Length: 366
Image (cartoon, rainbow, N blue to C red; front, side, top):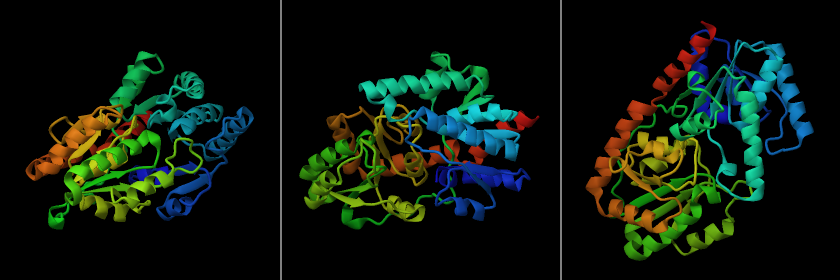
């Protein structure tokens, strides 16, 4: 799903240039979709949540077996496990050039429980082992880039920042919003996890509903992440829905989501940490003002006071104050939304992101 939703444009661009592109992925629903786009799919087995060392060694060997068969000139991996295992397997298979993209560091870098600290240490130890064997490392935000440089996991000569996987700004473009009887529509999109700031969004929605009543409408789009210990209890969310504080919509396909966001007035993202929020980039491209957490990843999509506001993580008073400014000032929403669109076209258009990746690939093969 990750490759199909976020990496397909770069894969298709490479195919059109005459490169042979393989998607080496676990078996799943999106394999056929990738094949329909002309991508050669090769499957390997992996347990995404496993920490069993014997299972993990087997996964590395399985990937190495696939790579020996495919014999790629370049191996490009995304997300933590594929990054770590990809380097190990790639070196076993003697792949000439390996690129890692660090899409974010995940919930273990947010929590301070004993388990989180141990897993965090293990992840950094594995990255210390593998990143020195990668030829090039791409980060999606400046904070993670600086952190890895500071602790000596990468050096400047082999690392760069490419902000996200890009967005087709011609498809994700602003639409004329219906006035909706003057109701201001506020939307947040993401998995229903504690770390996505869902509790804070519900608390702020409840507070502002008491002030503005039916003049403001809050919508949460997303579903619980089954098996994730930080997933929100859907009954808790439903209690706010039953009181009329929020509307809740399960996951939508990209076209439906685009329509819903296009008809919204303010986008909110209250995550405690992100790699680079895809939904934030979509909001930029659709010309929405944003209220987002002033934290790793999230702050990449807001220029304070220009296209939205940065708010303190978990600080519901700060969030409510900034949202109130936008709820009460339509002209400001429109001005900030227009600036969001400019940022999207300048910084995040998929064509520019593709050019940056192709530059890395061309460098790899001379």
